[in-house]
Image (cartoon, rainbow, N blue to C red; front, top):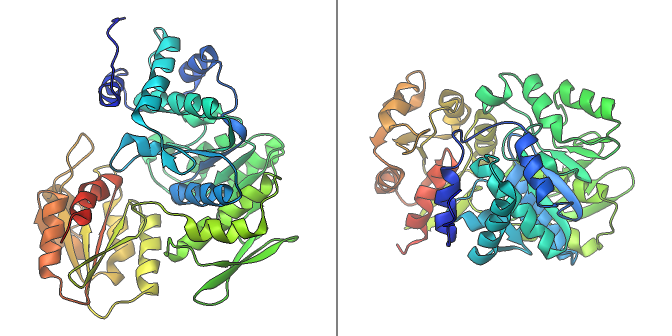
Length: 424
């Protein structure tokens, strides 16, 4: 092993990208071995692990925001990031600085020996080490892929959350909801609560909860989110009810995510001041979830949604807030995604399509994407080499009162945010 270690965060990230021959390697044996050498215990006094197909990042944001409003010291680990790796590791709402992450990567390297680790495994061990130093009241950890064999599943969480289960990452997790549910349910623990963010989860998840004696607490059955009016909604279960403001994250699905977060915190059995529920729901923020920008009288909405279930939620959000003019969609997707299913879910809400290419090993050109969309309205879309060009083309065609939706992946949003945040 070379004695010359990376010195900066950028050097570390370049280094860990090259360490393992596979970007994804399922299994916990290697990462568990390194964690034991690092003497990593629980990352906080309490911990919540959040898995699922869609809504994980938003649910983490609501849990984090409510817990911080309650006065707790909170760490959150999420992935992927949009613009900077530091976004993945937060303490008390702030991204951890480069020096702290470098110290964490050094701690991983000190313990790793000859054990190969993937990029995500390095990052997870680094985050757990950072959290262990911080003496957190609560650590909230988002599963990267699946659940059963994901590095985050090292942690025996006090509460597990499965937001939704739908078909995504089929090459790794299976091609139907039951198989995928089985992978997601790997984060459940015996005699510990699991919060299920949908009323009809796969039976594989419920079966796993039953076998383990995990208390399954289900949205729409054990807890409820009920609209009151445009400004307020009610969360309730059998023993508690509270009126809350609508989330700043405004898509209708975000109320479900907020309700799931509330159920998770209530399952911790640590008192939350009543005012913290409303403050946390109103204050939760996360980039790339129907994030709004204005460009010369045109509303631009940006979203990381990348599978048919997420696209259906986007369609519901667009329908809930109609605009006077047209809705133009800028879409760029990774090659392994169900692009046809995504467009079909959104087509009734979109008047014109702009397709863009994405770089990278999993990327594809706009022409390749269009080829997969021959049976959809996006077959006649305008094509652009990259996201920025496609966004500018859509904005050039948009008139005052129109809306532009830019979506399709974290990469799509990351390519657009710098342009949208610049003046103009």
